[in-house]
Image (cartoon, rainbow, N blue to C red; front, top):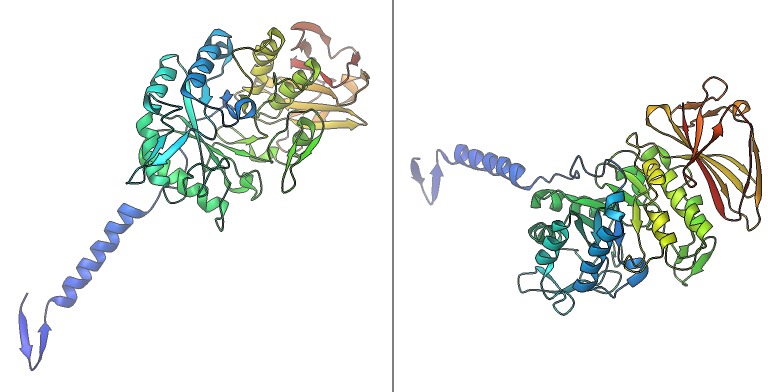
Length: 420
């Protein structure tokens, strides 16, 4: 580079060219280093996730010992063998951030640290999930991830975390789509495949933008441990099983392998529901292709609760690889008929009695052709005959050649798998 002095000014004959080269290289480098990948890890949650979460039963009362005991119980109870995989720690595991901003677990509750806990869970053939929040604080007042997303993702990867539930409290001024893109970019950069559970309660229609960002998204506010009620907390509400079910209307077209509508966790075994209501709750989540995330105390569940949660015939409906969510085809008073297309030309059909009284069913299969309103699948028993397998009694119950006559107990279900 040759410099020429003219008066008090220096003339740089090569400077313009050099600056152009440097500026161009800087822009190119920044493009390589700072453009984020806002897409989730592919190939995860190809069927709805199955596991357990601490919140519904234990809220903030979580600890290392509790989580280990739940992992032990998941194996011993037969839930792992039935398909349950994730042990998810919800809110309140957090301790403080260190001087560099990295999060640590509460040392009193998790004295061995999260890496040791993850190793314990992985050794049992299970996977570990943790919880954080897009805001400055979690819903329980612990440190949120806002401003620390990339640090937190690196920390989770170093621990061996497999699943992240990401909540939406204390998010002043944030936009949901952008906030969730930030955390998914952070998880991607950290380099460990993690299932991302978007939990902004359906406020910003995550089904419209979440397919490439997360693997599941909450469609409603929190579930409440009752079959048919609303719990009013003043500034917000939580919803019973039937209220949650009704809020799924119109959302099925957004769901599929790797991207699921999430109507929240299961309340089965938490004491408020009758055995029939437990069956209905579990069945409807299977018909919705919803994640099956248990929320009870696995260590002390009754035989009846275990029978519901490990019913392989219902789980097979949930985990059908085609991944098409069911739909309500008939509604008459408190009786509803739900249909779900399954792989290999099969169908799941659920008669749901929402009433406190028994419901009588007389259903003429051949006279009631059904067409999927979103995906075009057809159930026409006049053209194709089907055998009826009752998934709760685990017995064959005739075929579609005969009219179905049945009485469904109050707040219970009659569910068939139809096989051509």
